[in-house]
Image 1 (tube, helix red, strand yellow):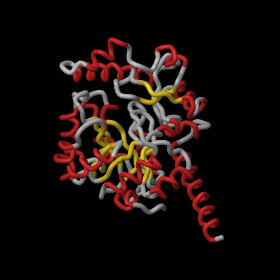
Image 2 (tube, helix red, strand yellow):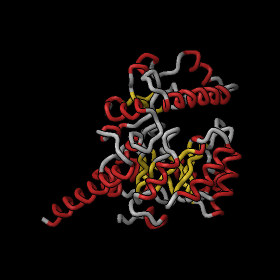
Image 3 (cartoon, one colour):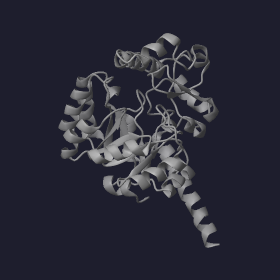
Image 4 (cartoon, one colour):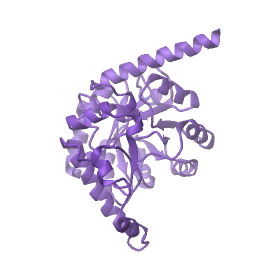
Length: 329
């Protein structure tokens, strides 16, 4: 076991969260994560309706042998948010990760039921704000993250947040090895949230081409695109992405900057983007948009979720032993 606030709070062996990934993380992956000694999180939007989400929550409550979490998009693009919160109140997942907006309502309604609330943050200003609202921990989304990455590397962001906040910091982004895990824990993080290394797993429900791309491409092939949601998002730089470009066109850009209709345009862009990613996740062609972070660099084959966790934990132990040996000498 690796003891941190995260492992002690949730009674898990290793301080790792399988990060929520839109249309990637699924029930089977969360179950396997729990069996292997970590805990997984999945977006509520991975279920296409509130009714499906409720059925999914029932199933996870019955089948998952350990703690699991739900990711909620808490801005206006998520038209199902109110119902999703009600379902989370009813079934009380072990934790909720909030993204892209204020967590106030989620904290108010779900925390009293025993659910821990983690909030995605990219700077200390927002971290202090969510702490004041009652968040239990912050997810430090750094520049190595997949999807909506932050601007700051973990080596700077984690210490800043640890110094500026009084709640635990969990680092998100760039971790795919045991040495990476060791490094962020040494910085003061209480755990890591990692997603991209789990895309190419046996349990993942994405297409074979998506999995193969995660094996074949590396860190140098990750680019930032605003095409998906209007917010910069990391994607694999496939021939199709090269063809369509990574920046919003002039019309999209002008509409997004119009103060009167900006929020509606963003909602439309986000909706369209989500549909694009949905098609990407289950399509068998490279004419798609595949989200991933630079940690796909550490993927060299498709394997079970458990094998990835075993490898990282083994590497962590080896790297820690090397460090201690050097210190003693």
